[in-house]
Length: 167
Image 1 (cartoon, rainbow, N blue to C red):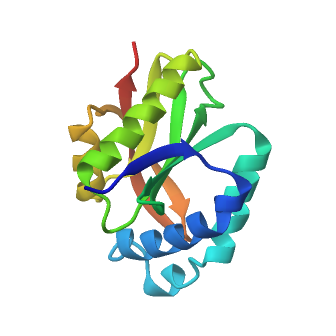
Image 2 (image 1 turned 90 degrees about the vertical axis):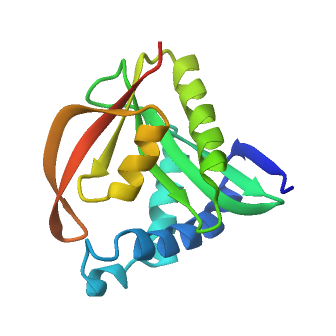
């Protein structure tokens, strides 16, 4: 059985996380985003964002390694619009990550949000992305009725907010 290790990400992890993010975006958003835009999802592009998140101190990144190989990570922190609530900014996984391993990482993220004093965790999901919605619903998140249109990747996309009650 593979050994799963969950730990905080460091600056040394950025290149590997950016490579995973590039592959993830091209796979997950196929069918939602034009191929031309998806081809711009490069590791260099994502590395800059990850570096800024880590260095800002506003975000935490936990990563999971399966036998020493990065399999998934999650970015979270305080919601700037609702400081009493936590916000999960991004979850990224490889094609070989099991649902159980994803659950373990999300559970650790939720525990850290609780320790930060938050009572609710929010995350936004594309309304047409049934696979991701199904995953987070199975992990206990529920839609709270908030919906928005956001310009993402140069396209207007519909997203729904999900919440998880931490207390």
